[in-house]
Image (tube, rainbow, N blue to C red; front, top):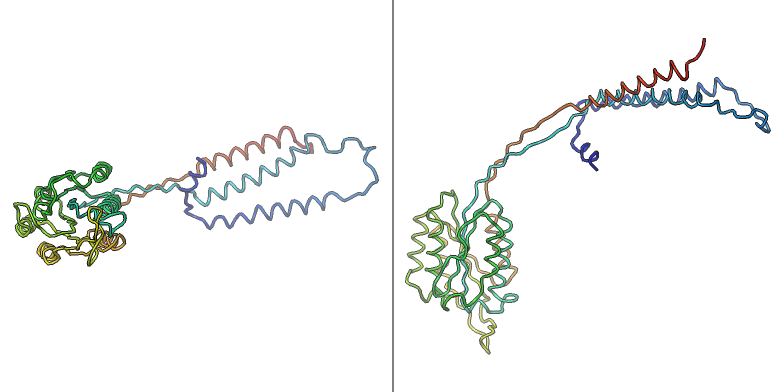
Length: 330
């Protein structure tokens, strides 16, 4: 495996040299023809009277001489092809985005028009979205009648995902304070020096509580250069809810969410099921792409020296055998 991994990084500066490999092939054919020409064939019924006719060790070494010459020839051809290691180093500079997801955790988010419910679907798809943003700093804000920061903005993806998994209904007094949720999210970003600051605000209701008006929070987002994407979650009409014996009305303040998004340079989306919410996250992911600059440093070094050494050793071994063990007397 290490040798295979090594050759994965090898390129050849002169690959046309491999055309010369036809020469060792021709040499093999010529040697076979010369052998048949030199030694005539004699058919006999038995060889018992000749005893051991394999020529002894010298016969084997003579064959080795020719083999060593072929190996030397092949190694020299590979040397002529100039094998080179090609190692690349990449310096990646990422211009990340600071992003806060503000998630409604009011009891209406338990409605079952999403699978298994709105809150669980929102958390699951938000986790996928976060996992695919490795260069961004991400934070979490939850809101109902009040709001608080579940996770400050951080590049530690695992911390964000762990805290996202712990979000559940009942953490805060029930209600829908859209202005409070947005204001808390903006406050996490106002000191940020990132070129792109984004809030994704997801809710399924109408602002009905909180001491910060949504319009005021929207103005603050605009002042601090925060772009807000708003998502209205819920089917159009009625939805089943575990705390109600009959389906409940779905009421989303779409005009307000559209105004917030438009005023801050974002966009409003309406999600009516898991698939549409996934598509919304995918679109936001496309709209808010992280800029990455990659500079490549390429280092090339010749790797033919050890092949040249091996060819020299084969040639030396052939010479030693030729003038010692298989030396012919004129």
